[in-house]
Image (cartoon, rainbow, N blue to C red; front, side):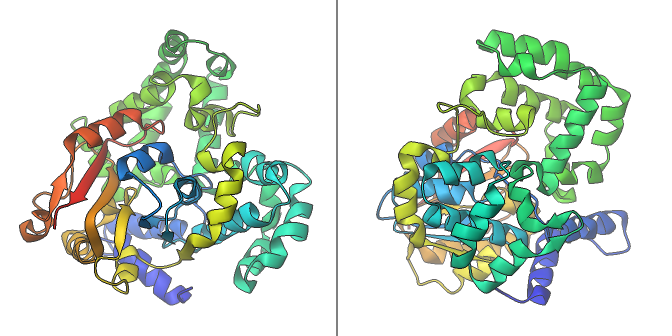
Length: 408
């Protein structure tokens, strides 16, 4: 792992686009400080959509942003040759290493699911000490055994793993607002049709966005830090509705709760229930499904997790060595120099036919006009695959999904 100083510098380079003693600069530095801790215990990009768009297979060497690790582990169900997962958050790296070790060393699917699927069982701490901790490197083991204000960090596994981190706490705050407004999510979770889901949204959720409190909070950039949205990405979100961030958030919440059957959308369950559906046939990320357990376990050794920037890692990779790149929404944070540096390395390391996927806070592809024409002409934008991926992404929080193929 890189030193704390280097990680701090890299975070600053990724997030800080304005002078320190400006309103935007202070917001950026506040977000950067928060991002050094845990933001996502669960990633909010649909790995099923990712794998289809990437055409992921056994010959592919993948480079991706690690985030909460669900994508990394789920990609293993496609048997890729290797995965290099990077993240600037030290906490995300530690979480990915914990999840990988749990997949490898839990005595069976039931124990793994109790720890990573439920994340709220009292026995999970003992399971961590017995089965997982002995296989962690010293730094990762010390991190999870370390103390926080509420006790040992590993207690997170017994107190609701997905209720922690910035996003987990943000969802908790949303539930508090909903309770005060008299909203009960139980009817949504029990809905049998899309019409029932839409009726719940129209009568229970949509009115919240008209309340003075939600209108006030949503228009404060710092209020959305809990969604992992830095100031630069906030502006891209708002631009989709002529600056009206509330309209954007309302529409994306509608998609989350109304466009997919609730029983098939574990992202909606995380938002409405603060956990996965606790039934054997529940909608789950691929890596948590019993039918994939042995495959993910067998392939876990193919993953390398690094606390570094994506561009920095790619600079050390051979020419033409990678077939698949999953960038999440990281490019929304970048200035033009950073975007060009990244795409120079992607293009250099891309094997013939390589694929890149990424998401954007706004609708539009952010690369044209920003990444050099000489670089972009070596790539082909896949409009149909991009539209299909956006339509099918159950997480529903992004404005765009984009697919590029390398043409040489």
